[in-house]
Length: 90
Image 1 (cartoon, rainbow, N blue to C red):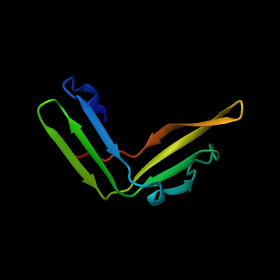
Image 2 (tube, one colour):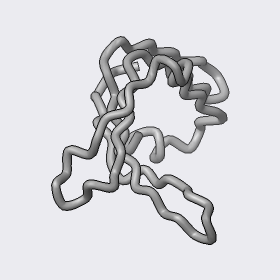
Image 3 (tube, rainbow, N blue to C red):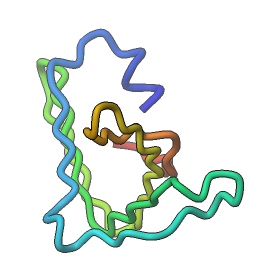
């Protein structure tokens, strides 16, 4: 992610995290934040188009996102507070 943010020629990025039924919801692993929720994605696909070339990568490695809930006026929104990022050459 950090490297993509530095590339000025990227036109689009598509990140496919599969069907919701394939995600695994886990409790927080941070004792200081029991309200957090972790979502494990077992298969994902990313496509990056830089204007000249389309790069595509499919991963069967699990990616785990950690979310923090915020409720305002009865509406809950979720913010990503951390995720595991696996370095890869695309």
